[in-house]
Amino acid sequence: PLYIMGMLKSQAFRGTNDISADMRTAIWMRLETMNVPQMAAYYYPRMMALHNAPDSCGMPDEHGRVALPDMLNLTSESMTQDGIYLLEDGDLILMWIGRAVDTGVLGALFGVPSFEQLDPAQGEQVIGTRGDPLSNKIAHILAQVRSERTVPFMQLKIIRCGDPLEARFFASLIEDRTIGLQSTYTEFLQRMGYRPQQAQGQNPPMGGMPPGGAPPGGAPGMSGPPMGAMGSPGMRR
Image (cartoon, rainbow, N blue to C red; front, side, top):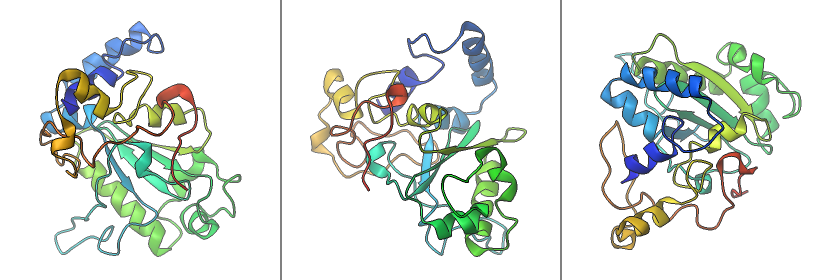
């Protein structure tokens, strides 16, 4: 049911008028070229926190492989305004930056002293070039994500809290209410006749493996406002 809901909320199938006919056709053609792991990620993207990634993540091992941070549930309840989050859907990488991110983190990662001075268009060129351990760690994480997807190159879009592209990021948090479907995952399961309260506490699906009928991490998205294009997230601080 999680992937079914992801399909209904995706740009390919959601019944909204914000996707033009040409764009929807292009998305369908792109889906025809995706392998199974990529398509699974498209309908249930992978989100991870970068600002507090453990020391065991972001550094290549003897085989050149980089351990990635844990996958988060796709809900704004997984996020805070002092965080930096990466979301990838098998085709595109989005990096969301909260308003309250520590200035030291912004300086180490982007070379800017404040949130307001961060230029999203120039951000990717700076990551990994400053010699700072955090900058190098995140650059390695980005490289590992790209190496796992058989596409020519996964474009990175950096999004500051409040930017217009923010709606694209939060529309991918399918466990919340989104522009594509005004139901949380728990509400969707209840409508379909499932009983999510019987199996709470599961982790998000990993590596394209199909999830069970229970929502990962309990009942997310019930307390926050509608997501997607409806405005800023009602996340924790």
